[in-house]
Length: 435
Image (cartoon, rainbow, N blue to C red; front, side, top):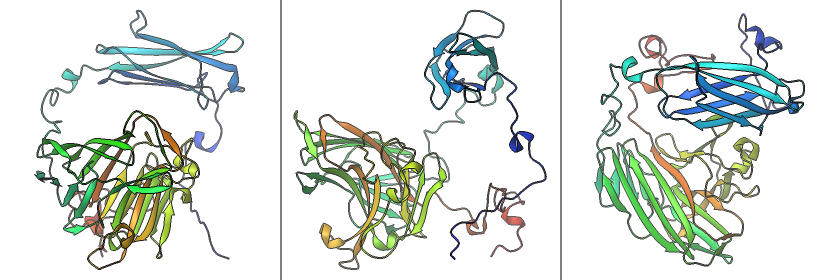
């Protein structure tokens, strides 16, 4: 008798005809082509899905030329379809200002072809078209950008607006404060399991600060332990984001067999009441938002969300995890699981509650508990024969000064409610019930 799911569809007066019923495409096949004029990258995609038998299309042939005519500036034949798309990404020589056309055909198994289909675009003379800002310093990010303030550095303590990071030997934080309150119960640690024995790698030194600017601080560090040699490079930005590339490999010429390898982020229990995790590309349809339950042991893992939501061929890597409370928190983020050893049965991330005494530490309230976020880089026995590099970021929240009356702002982009999307009088200022 319990309602598990409800869905409401807000129907408008009319919709485009192609939304309501099938309409055959006007061209032989869908084709997209786009140019990045600054980097001279050309993206091409031809779709065979709409054919009566998509498998009959065995190749996409294309050529890019000036619209006025002349030899091809780029051409190719694509013979591998991924999800029925033939795609290519080309680096071109810089194009002169002018108009261009990309023409493509689908080659069928019997030798015939569909098309041609063409796409046109115009390369602008940027210096002429955008003269009011082209060549100026308006886009310069090598400066302090309000509302952020100049960063300070004292030994291994880096302080962007509203937060402080005490950097450990590899750039992983020994301590994090946000708005004057500590988030961590102790230093972030790297734990290796070798031969069934769990070892916490000693990270007792400090990183070398290699660049100090008001808007960015760069660092690098090295460490050893559990038969591993580790190194790291990274930086802290003015908005409080710390980016880190961590390399781990055998400390010597012989491979090392690891039963497990993980990074542990120990939070003070009272600072980690809530959790957020969502899927790649900001996929909020695969999302966990929850208040962490009481008790010890595992509280959550990415296996709870499902491997399919991670969009990974192997493993359950999700790119975003945040732990915190209503006042502050810490965001963990990574673009990919490069350098990890993924496994379908081992969660990429998990959150556990443990006793402080298990890690030889006590917080200000005595022998309490801590909430630990684990990044399971390696979850099952693996022979490490060469260095591997993982990239990750962390960032304490709130990320920036909050706007006045921020609690009165409500905004939505799905048409269900409105409020703060427009700040010039249409939004929250127009509300009569801000409470």
